[in-house]
Length: 122
Image (spheres, rainbow, N blue to C red):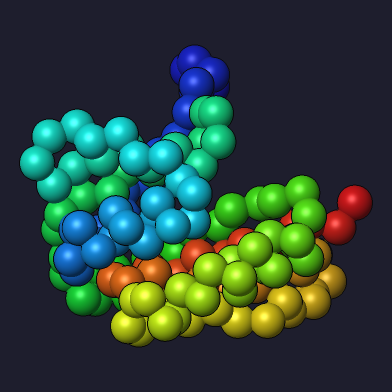
């Protein structure tokens, strides 16, 4: 390896940047705006992604992000309590799916980006 990395951050598109900002703030993520139509979205210290005011349907609807959490059941209950689909058209939240590697549920954000929220088996 040339040099160990310090972080990795994907870029996520937004069909409606302001709506996506509200969506991620509702998830209790912290937005740090870095100019017009561009923000760093912090999920927790050292974990985050860049949200940009750029949308191509094929790109957004084929983008996926995996977020590993400690307590998947509690995370899903919190997400359900937010009633995201009633606030954001097109947003979907699934039930937990069990697989050989672990468990996960899915959230489609307002632009169609698919979030995998999961927990690996120990």
